Amino acid sequence: MSKTKEYVENLREFHEAIVRLEDATRALNETLARIDTEHQQQDIQDEPKRDVKADLAAVRGMLAKQASKGYTKEIKDLLKKFKAEKLSDVDPKDYQDLYYSAESLDK
Image 1 (tube, rainbow, N blue to C red):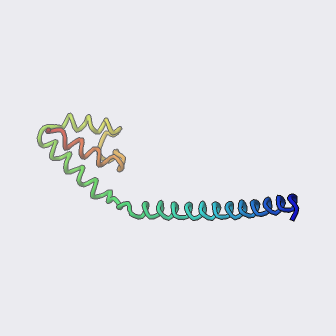
Image 2 (image 1 turned 180 degrees about the vertical axis):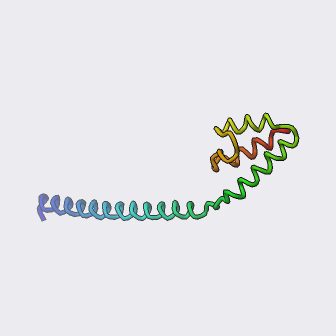
Image 3 (image 1 turned 135 degrees about the horizontal axis):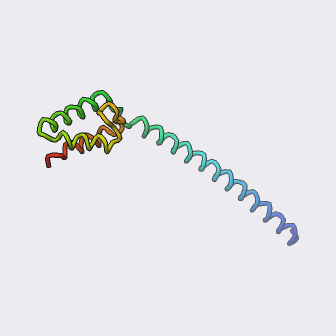
């Protein structure tokens, strides 16, 4: 086999190897993307569902407890901090923060 034919054959083999490598890389990326999507969906499903009514009742109870201890002004200030005039105006996502803020009033 002449040097030119050998060179052309080597180039063809390299080209085929590159094509196989590109296919393998593409398949790996697709698999990784699928796994990532499955993990994200599983993470969403694993998040516990919050009971807004129970959270509201707990916050209301804590505010009442603190009000009975004489922290009425501080409670009003907390509500203003959460951009609310009354408890029903507080965003449910802020209930936990409000609860712990009210709990810390007597510490």
